[in-house]
Length: 81
Ligand code: HEM
Image 1 (tube, protein in one colour):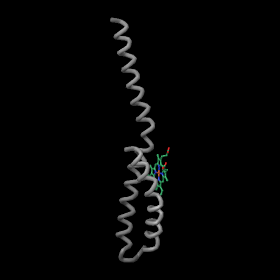
Image 2: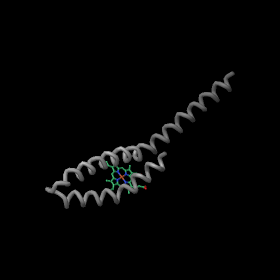
Image 3: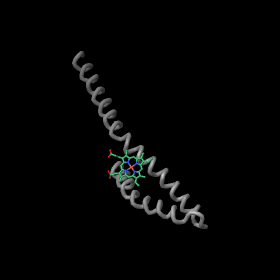
Image 4: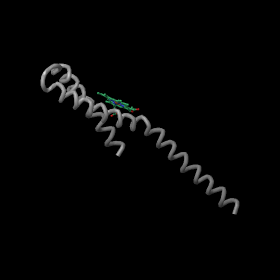
């Protein structure tokens, strides 16, 4: 899942550059607003996938941490019994 998101983020990067050039070169023309709309959509996809990539390391660490502390507590309970 996270691999897929990273791949999407990576491969959308060059597409985003092309869209950006298209936005600049179609300013003022009839298709300008349509391409701008596409760019806005892509920014949203980038922001969400980027946020995911940014938060993932902490999320994984936090999950590992809680798992370990649960095991730790379980060990204490077992030892005390
Ligand atoms: C709000 C927008 C964005 C956010 C929050 C964001 C965030 C991130 C984060 C957190 C990473 C992972 C860095 C790491 O490995 O530690 C990443 C990777 C990357 N980002 Fe973005 N990004 C954004 C927009 C963009 C845009 C506009 C482009 C290019 C047009 C771009 C291109 C890339 C590329 C090529 C990578 C490397 C992906 C890989 O490891 O395969 N990002 N980004």
